[in-house]
Image 1 (cartoon, rainbow, N blue to C red):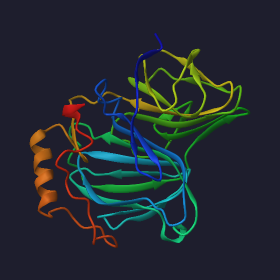
Image 2 (cartoon, helix red, strand yellow):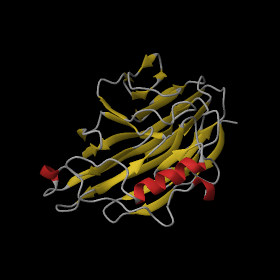
Image 3 (cartoon, helix red, strand yellow):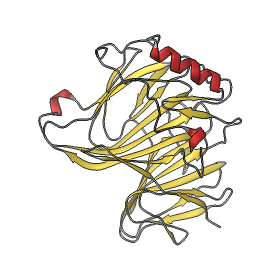
Length: 295
């Protein structure tokens, strides 16, 4: 058996573009350290429309932002400002707590602009849940390619190449673009693996992948990813996290008590502010869209 389970996305229509969430889900909370997987777009935001994710907090996780098209301005409570663009991975480690915002660049708001990419969270492992917050942007990522294949290693080691992106636990993450007739092996080393077709068409050992579905792969098997007409696929996974994790809104922890503390800290303004974006914030929800206890 090549595919253990297939997870259908939950789609949220944000007006200018759609967001599709496959983790956490009732069928699976995590794949390796990946505990949250969103895919957004493709879409063209018209002039005047913009992404405006106001400041909000995180604990116990690392966010990974990867764009296929478009640009996002990132600001956080460490004082970081970075414009995320395709080919650059942004890794924000929340640890004991961080606040950030994500907005369309001001200089591009009066023009039509693409929006297409991935937002994922990695649960921090035991012993690292409360590390200091940090941010890094990495651009010189390994590219594995031939005539019909272009695979970018975003995190971890794949196809003999290793990305220099920080790993808090064993992680693999890659964007694979197959031209018509292209194929690439999927290594068997990672404990847990999944693939997500985010554009075009592709199959795994002859089994067709559904668009925007997360296919969780059987462990210990080498596989072949191929496309007859061309496709874009995300490969993700890594070592299993030792203990279970709870997700509530933007908080991840092995302890429900720690999540409750983070809720109280956000309600009472104890998190740090975001320099340059301190006038707005997202209030804590009564019923969050993301709640692993209800997944």
